[in-house]
Amino acid sequence: MPTIKKVAKTARATKSTKKTAKKTVKKAAKKVSSKVAKKATKTKTSTKKALRIANNQQSFWVTDGQILNSLLALRDALDAMEKDVYAYHADGWQNDFAQWVEIVLEDSACANDLRKAKTPRSARTVIVKHLKFYKVNAGGREDALGYTS
Image (cartoon, rainbow, N blue to C red; front, side, top):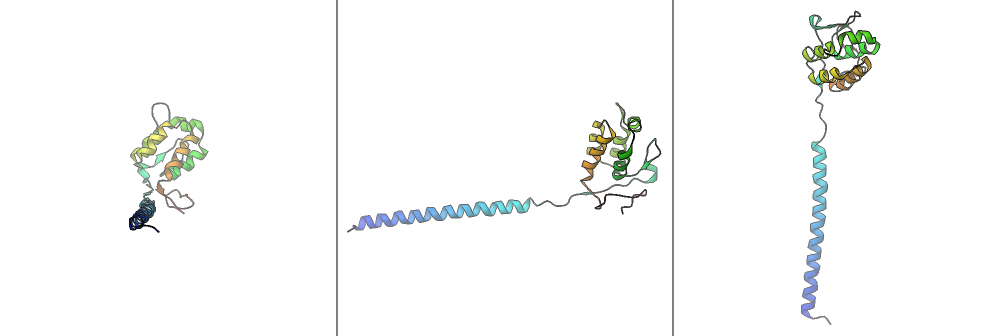
């Protein structure tokens, strides 16, 4: 037959085991709830900028006759642009496209990346990358006046 001391000792051990188990469960629950809270705060909010459309005086006049008024128009123009036309506007020491994007369209990050582009295709890739930061309709097209369709 167990003595009173042994029974009391066993009871204390059982209580401490139960307390440890409760603490472990509480910690696990706390970790899960804090992870859920972190995920909730990391929810991406739409911080896209409005696409800037240049007025007629500030539009970009390409040597092949095209008139560009936005990043969308520049992207579309670069699709079909000949290398010699691109080279005329973006030679080694000056890039007219980058300057126009920086000053008129007010996108210095895009302009800096455009300065690194050596071909119309690489410049188009830069434009497409930066268009992701703008509010553009699903088709991503606009007419000559800058109205999206």
